[in-house]
Picture (cartoon, rainbow, N blue to C red):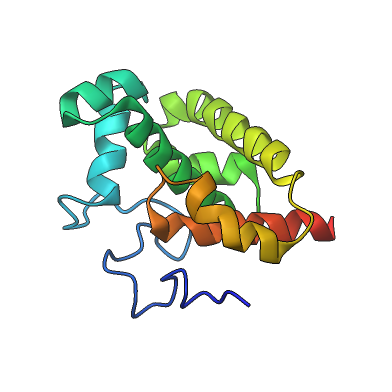
Length: 153
């Protein structure tokens, strides 16, 4: 059985501090210069345009999109799969809330559709690294959590 420790989801295994405050809101005053908050701030400044952000970071578009998808899945998990609440946690700007909510809904729906092909959590756990190879590993556990949560529904 794959555990959170195997996926580096334990508090001691996470190198980057969580980007969410207990209330589920981004803390823009964080000192996480190269981490998730800086990444989300840059996305916000670029109106959540993946291509523009990829150019600015000098990264592949797929890499940027996968990281953003991972952050969205994390926000969803931390907000009990509530898309509107997850969007509030990610957006940082009320004017961009609708845009972010649409992106999160797209990621959520696409991920759910992908997960339907897995007959068990164990099989998904074995293949999550390959299937989501462009997404940082620290977010893979949220895919497993989504699978578990949606299987119960």
